[in-house]
Image (cartoon, rainbow, N blue to C red; front, side, top):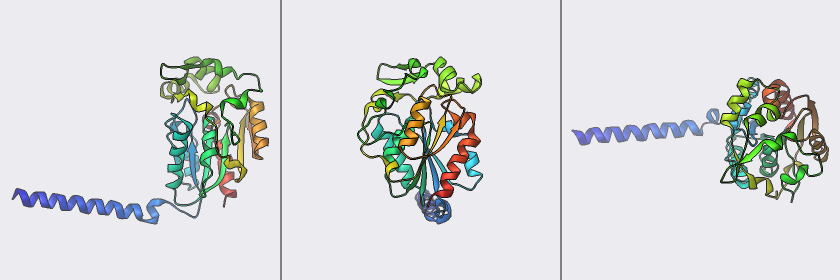
Length: 260
């Protein structure tokens, strides 16, 4: 009797597994391939929840949205995470990067599925450049003084850095959560050189933040000009996706509308 019961349970498990496999293979489960998906890459000192206010605005327009969870352990690891998310989409992709995420999408965006790039207060290196050298010809950003390493070489922002320089236009209740949930980044990631610059072959959008204490506003404007991006400016901190999500969503939607 017990043998028969085990056989029935095993058969049921197989049937359930086949059912799930069939659902995963259907077009309805994989999304609408006729419209670009939006893949978002967060920056250092953050995680995917940094985009919690923008994602619903994009979903309300019927878009498929995926926020990558970067390991922040190296440029290669973060690029690999972005590529997995891109490959999982049913059709074309609008690839969005914030801050350090700009370096990631510059490398990961050299993918046939990527239709366009959106930089949000983000780095946009060229081939052979690393992220750290981009700001060397500009006055130091105030927030840099509040980045601290741990014994393993991972960098975090202090509470003061988060409150007064990373997200100074958000309430203290929000920055307290951001401080607690921030993703430390391996410091040597900023020294790794890019091998490709996807903005050279794909249309780009850039949202520049004029009250940014982490990436100098002048540097942002110069990078946007260098890559030939459609430029939007907002008076915001380094995290406009949290302080002005509707404006950030509109830039992404513009890229979606113009992507083929």
